[in-house]
Length: 196
Image: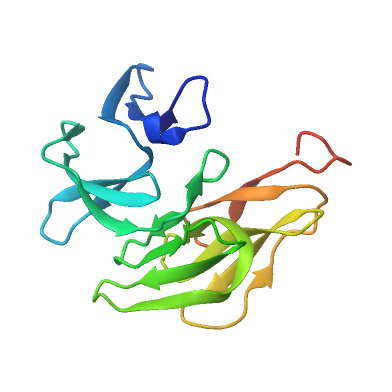
């Protein structure tokens, strides 16, 4: 998780892990946010994180929970804010999706598969945030804002138009897929039903 104090500049934040059985915390990276661990086919792994709209990758020992080498920049222009976190996600099969972070009005959602093929998944600009793959890697959930609300949408990554998932008032965002790849838990700030 990302840890920071007193500022919305997450470039100076820390990436930490928490041991759920003890509550003990350990800082694994200073200066960055939205850390994600990605396992590589050769058995090694990388800690990926954002800093100044650039995605970095650092060799990471999952057993010791430590960065074991120098982080290198992988991709520039990746979106991320203190509100949405890093606007990128990986599937277990190696497909990578990100939203550009260039300061232009709205964003696009791109994807990069494990063979290096790059293409837009949603080429039309929109106010997208928090893209998340389903555990089976076949679907993508994301939030899309309009002038008056934010709703969750879901789409198949192999094509097809997105389908609106939420119809509650307010902001509906931060999707988390359940292991069955069929159900989603999310945050809602529906003013008609506070606390949902």
